[in-house]
Amino acid sequence: MNKIFSRRFFMLIPFMSILKIFFKPMQVFASSITSKGEWNLSKEEWKKRLTPESYYILREEGTERAFSSQLNNEKREGTFYCAGCDFPLFSSETKYDSGTGWPSFWDSLKGSVETKMDFKLIVPRTEYHCSRCGGHQGHVFNDGPMPTGKRYCNNGLALKFVAK
Ligand SMILES: [Zn+2]
Image (cartoon, rainbow, N blue to C red; front, side):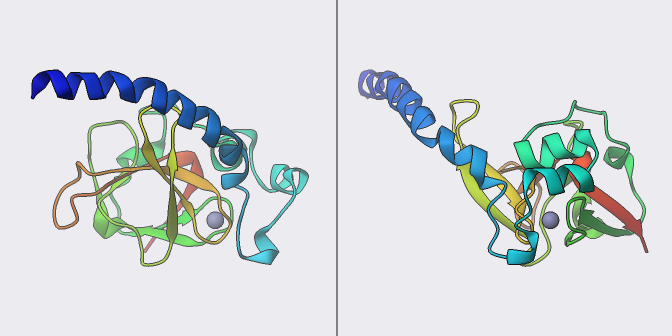
């Protein structure tokens, strides 16, 4: 059993590398594509709307440094909005301290985010972005707390918090 498993595992590595190459062009566009015409802005328009740091996260799928966001420690009641288009994405009711250094939630507001696979670290991860403007927010993992078991690991720079 073990032999078969490890053989399969090693066969998977070149396979993943091929997938990575194949999916690379998609990454460039994924955070820009939105079905909402009014949010299909050009690079220049986004640069005018956003700070360089938020542009890097939202439009280039960047990741901020762990423990760098003040929102990591935000414990007030309120709503977290997309920093790109002000669409409500998360409620403070689903926020929790994951210990990772990024604002974390066990659920998103209904219909607020869409997901896609990303192979940036070779191992596939589930990227998620704002369903309105397509701005990259973070990655969702299956090691979160109940009731969903999900961990939405979000960049603070991609969010705006408004207290109740
Ligand atoms: Zn948005």
